[in-house]
Length: 133
Image 1 (cartoon, helix red, strand yellow):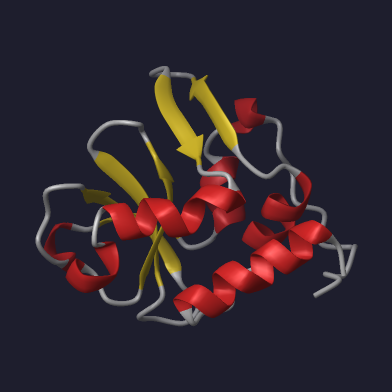
Image 2: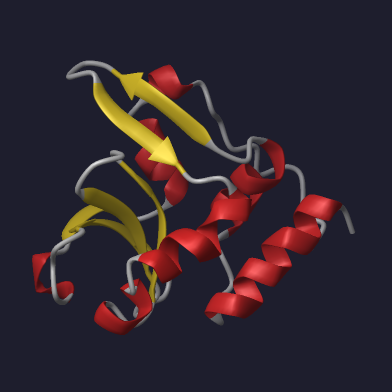
């Protein structure tokens, strides 16, 4: 098991979840992403694996949004968040000032589907390689 695999497993244990395979693959290969993506030049940031626990604890997200894991956002008010209250978990946007799930805005049904909305990111998930976890 690689160092990245160990860190992924540690984060999963911390949150009590199993990340979807496409997101696990992204963490193991890319790790993070921060860039402006056309056409609106919106900023998209995917947190590095080492930041996941700290980011989630800093915002008390687990208390306000049980079943959530923040994985990124726009470096401002919107947090890209997995909603683990359902299986498979979907990705939603949450405002940092929101008090509960009622303000969540559905973004994608999977991490791959999210990134497919931004082909400029250049990231492609190759599901032909099995996860080493």
